[in-house]
Length: 587
Image (cartoon, rainbow, N blue to C red; front, side, top):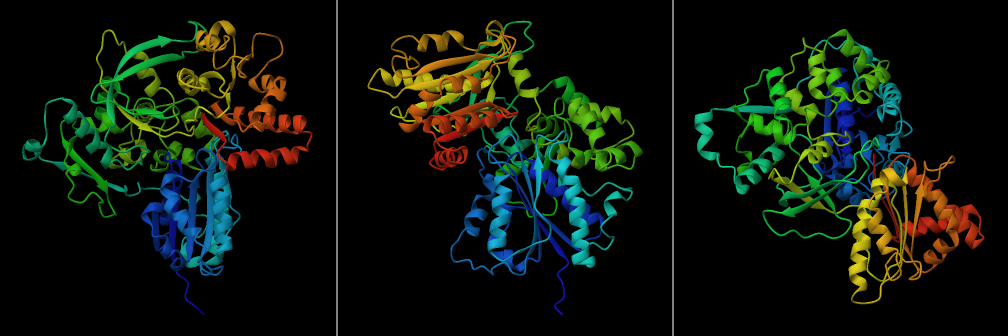
């Protein structure tokens, strides 16, 4: 009988860090059960041609955008789709797939589902039915992860007891010591390293500091480490009415360092500043020397940077300021796993998950607040870096409140920025558009309408239908003058020109009215434009809006074309595959 391999490989594909968090948790718990060999790797760190040599693999994958694979998975996925791979290529491999997604999206956990199917097609054997984490769950993806992980350990133990020598129930055992951090922080002699470091705060020096600090962080960023440009704010105007309960603002910037190139639909990422008082309090709480110089690198992996100049040390306070969100982000569950105190142990357990959610995410406690709530806890800086970087992906507060606080008339703050492609590709002037952008979802479409208006000055352009929604006409009718001016005869939103501007004020009458209601009222016009080859763009809240809008399109296509809902669904799926249905949503 062939000897079983007692190695566990955990591969993750993460866009914002959540899948990496989950994968590292798998790794920690396997190590606590004395698994002989555990490897946790991003998919872009693993050679896919080596997959047949693995016996037990756990895949943890996120779904991004409209069912797209994370950047770190693209090459791996392309390899798996090769036609020369046989149906027995992975016959020795036993696998499990856990997906992280959001059920408010039409293609919920699409990446996990298609990976699971492809692995089966290539001859691999599933250890357990795939797990699907849902961001809409009250406890986030962990609400589904906890029971699935428990079942996985049981199945793995039945398959090979030597893989988990302490048995499948080790997760509930007492954790009496802190796991070894995955990163190493090297402290440098200030005098020795000082010649390498510039003290001037010119743009080049600031750019270099940002690049060095970000290149050392354990978290993966969607943007490159070096900023594309530096901006200064020229306008900061409130759009929502004071006292309405919302603070929606219009910002304008101009480039300081160089000219910038972008298209409508591109995304601007900025690196916000932090409260000096909060940074100082955090450093003091962790008993750190803010003036010391450090380099940070993975502990168990060969440093990819090698002898690169990026590995030059940075001041500890600078590293914290540029890479760690200490005053608005809630810490990851990892923090609560790592200590022997009874309350922390309870929070880290499956039984305490909902209470942890209430204490941590719902109350929006920050890293600094949690540390202050547990004064006896002394966290090594290596562990702190592991669970606070990068700037928290989904927490609100840091960037928006910082930008809102800037006064362009009084301050000249340099803002590091990156320009990236979003989920809304720029349309050619000849393409008819159906835009749905309730609330702040209207922001990208302001650019679409303005560019189409400029294009119309030099030649014929296709019409635009725009559906906007907000609570009250008086409180949050964002950019109302702009939309109404382009709705006048001759404007790109003019009904005379084949377009239209339709607005839903949800709270201005007893019965709530949303954008999907206005869409149904204009069903004939929408179907006419779709039949002429129009593209659909949806932007706004990721809660229920995207799925409600999609359902409205289903109903419109079915009614206006007099076909069953199943047929209209297939028609819309074809529209998606043709690259004519785009969604960009955020929490």
